[in-house]
Length: 463
Image (cartoon, rainbow, N blue to C red; front, side, top):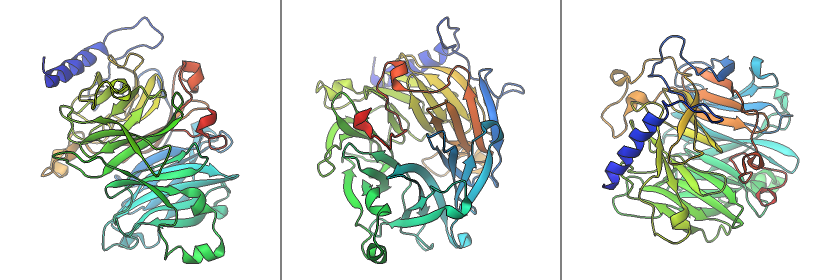
């Protein structure tokens, strides 16, 4: 059987498997077609706690939630005519409310908008980093991110801008960012920029003397402490990264970078930022022209890869053969999952054994990958109620299939209580709970306590 046929067989097996009943802990369920029939918008085990329409359609991007229950805030990026971000108060998740809005000056002059946002804490203060992408000719075309001090929330008057991070050599801003507390103790910002993920030391950004503040416009690289390159290969569809995840690997004590872009997916050891070391490449996978979102399991054994094309499933890769030196490259998936083959899964968060997916027109889905070769759906809620697969209304002369780019953009999970938040490009902000999922820690599931949620006080090496 050739590799392409093997992937198709895996997908068909998965689609059949999710429809069977289960006697185990988690019930396997069948996701309905989209849009779902009346009364079947969500599975019986997924509850909507709050829904906030945020405004005009297609002005909503990613979402991030703070992990500290004493700071019950989520952040939603805004684009289009509403360029900036909204802060949602989740002190009572059943009564979520917008308590703060920040908008860039002269939004009508800007072409583009806010994309990805990330929270971090450092030396007793709390910050939010909002990434931006503005086209050339717009104001702030070189600005990739703005750092805000949000320690004073919920008092709006105490939220203030700390710095705008610009990169004149790679204009166009940062499509995606990730914040990570490195094993050195440094809070780092990873950002898509040109043919690299550029790494900025956020300690340098937030701790500045008045002289440094005056000089920062002349020295925009003063916080730049590393560059993670995209390994070059033949017939690359993209020469940059689209998305990435950074996590601590307990078994080896390494800081690891997981990047999607180029011709596939890449894993680096970045313990020494000056000498990033390629550990794994995933190239030549049938159906994958480039990597998009790429997220590992807590132990670093498996990783979920997305590629931004309609009909494409999420693929699950076993990294062990490459990490152990048995092969030079991974060229096939061991498992695949899709909520609806006509659509496209987008961003995802891993809380082993569950993967929480924001799937554009299919909304939120949750699948289990306890057996990575046979993942299955366990819960869903369709946050998007607009027209599906609407090619007439969107661009079609493109390698992308624009007819399905609407609906759920971002998803995040609060580990303390299992609260799920979703940002939908059209319908707004959602807070949901899945029955039986009342929080997550690695120890409770027999895996390292590693996820996208950072331990800002202790750092990864203390996990």
